[in-house]
Image 1 (cartoon, rainbow over the protein chains, first blue to last red):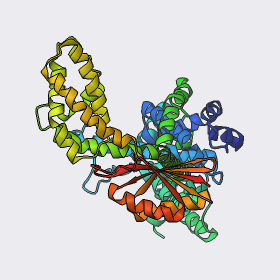
Image 2: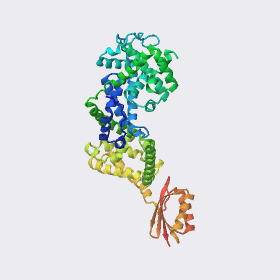
Image 3: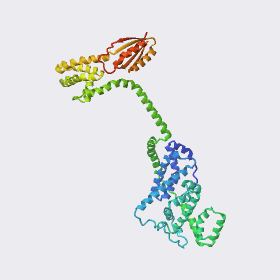
Length: 201
Length: 314
């Protein structure tokens, strides 16, 4: 089920065709990368329709800017950077929107220091084991959703998509050390969140 | 190391990216600390859950929609954008080329029409001065120009009203105009007047048309003088050098050359000069070569006149 195996980088021939405006060649690239892009977007946003929109936008934007793509970076990395950035922007939009809306009972409970209040860890062996797989999936996504954007990105790219630290560092334009510290914090928050029985519960 | 420190490092511990010293410390702690061991287990479990998250499948329409958008949205947009925002390295040379082309074309056009402008200028200036003085009366200036253009058919159809008007105003003002201004415009009026008269006269034979009859010949003589220009023939040895000398002489006398015609063994200069300077010019020309005068009648001429100087090889 993992997609974290390295995608072969034989995009270059196709790329040069795309740069000449060959839409058919671009279609091949779309088919090849859409799944991974959609998964990144979906985990970032947590909503299937929005994720599909973002993937479309990302491809259109990639096609427009394909001439600016420098062969230094891997094409896939470049594409995923676009999708991460678009997802990030979408999240900001959603956040602004939800701030304007009247809060709902489903919103996470925020304290003064804007941290999610987490119930003290229970002493029982683990609530996690009892959850059905479907439920677990849902809980995990909910907890991912509750993460701040910068932690979410790193967690998705590393633990879900399996990129290396240096690749993530390239994509997000941050130092490898920062990638690591964010990742570890993200995992720890996620652990606490799951232990507490889910982000929104 | 307390539990807090240990828990912070658990992630790195799982990935095996810590020093062996730290690793030993953590393992030592884990043996004795139930809470931290649990945390480690939970963290491992969490990472597992995250990795086991199911992949979602893209909808079948995703590719089609992307390609449709790429084809429809990007292409025309790019076309327009590229037209509007050409990169500068294309834009600047393009604009420079366009500017040069426009400049060259302008110069070329100017050069081709220049002589016409020169010739047209003289009468047009006179029209400009003539019209206001002539139009003291009723008809606006535009009407005047119409009169020049429109053939005298209106008088034919509508009795003699128009012809009457034209004929009445013209002869009355003619003397004044003639005194004030040079003659070139006169022939036009005269010929027109004659036409009008011939039509109007034939039809109506009323007073004003007869007036015109008397006025017209007067104008005609004035005009004829202008047309039958003074013609000087200079016999010289070397036509070309002498023509230049003559041009200089002409300028000294306050005249200017309008046109130069080169013929075989002959150069004809068409020049404009004040009548009073003509005699002085003739004297000077005599120094250059043999001069024959034709039609030198300077009486009653005012303003600059045209003279023709033929330079003939002896």
